[in-house]
Image 1 (cartoon, rainbow, N blue to C red):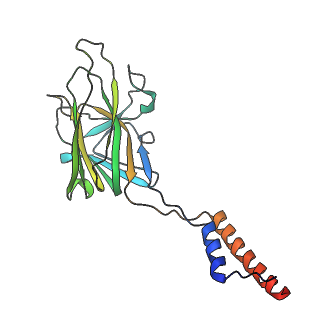
Image 2: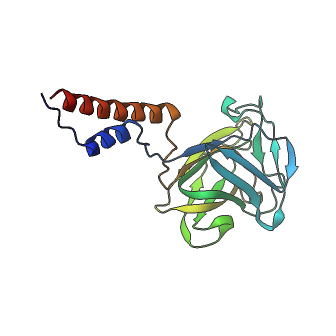
Length: 223
């Protein structure tokens, strides 16, 4: 019996065994590994995506611990982005080392009867440069006046319809334009990433290809 198995077919079977899959990286930035206190910039990395956060004109912000305050979800942990000076209307600038297709975060306020509005703008380049890819505004839900002061958590996801590398955002009420707290920033990468094959998968592909080649040679000798 002859086994007709071309070398090209063997190579194909070996390649299939360790062909890398493609995926869009998704990352969440919760600030838990960073120190508390005031700053003018921070940089953090998750799932291979790096975010650098600043504010216009070098305005300050801080990471605060609001864990345990009335209404604050456990998901906020012990590090939450605090606007530090809520009378300065400068935007936050979130800049990334890769192109993104979606951006979102959790947010909230301890004065839920205020008329809070969030503005979000996505730009094609880093640090708010390049073309404006898209923008949106979000009105925070409010509790009735005279309600007990409690943190009112919400979240937003922004998909502008094109790839972008930076986002400008701010949120607050009239007279307090940057008064919200933010946490759990979420992003999705715009481009497909081919991960490096696992060593075990590569070894399996080599063994499979070599074994089939040996089988073909043996069959030919016996025929």
